[in-house]
Image (tube, rainbow, N blue to C red; front, side, top):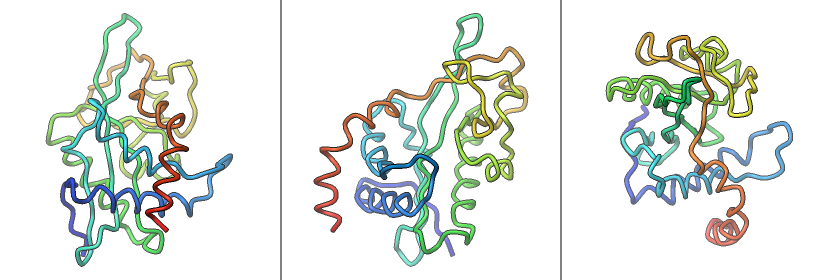
Length: 196
C-alpha cells in the first residue's frame, strides 16, 4: 500500500535519483536528455516552491513516487494577477508505472491544494491523461501561454468553482523552469558520478 507523506530534507537525494530514473525511461518527442532531476534539485530554493504540496509516496520505506508544486500566475487583460499553482515533475519508479501510484499521489496533492485554499492548478502535461483528474483545456478559460499560444497539453483545473472566471489572461510559470536549462550541465556531471 502506498504511504503518502510530505518530503523531508532527508529525502532530497532519493527523490532526485527517483526523478532521474523516472524521466530517463520516458520517450518524448524532441527529447535529447533527462534534466528533470535537476529541476527537482533547484526548485526547493525558490520562493515559488510550495513545500506543503511536496509529497513522496513510499512502499516498505522506499520512495517510489513524488510530486512537487510551484506557484505560478495569470496576468489578466486589465493587468491584475491571479495566483495559480503548478505541479511537476511528477515521478514514479519506472518498473511501477501503470499501477496507479502516479494517479494516487496526484489526487492526494490536488485534495491537499484544495484544502489549503488554492484556487486553480495549471499544467502542461499529457492531454489524454490529466482530464481524468478534472483538467480541461486552458483555452476554455480564455487562458494562453505568455506568447499567446494554446495547445492541447496546456490545461487547467479549478479547485474553487468560478475561480478562473471568464476574463482570461496569460499564464506564467516561475523562472526556475527557464533557469534550470542553462545551469544543468555542470551539476549533472557530479550527479552522474554519485548516481553510478
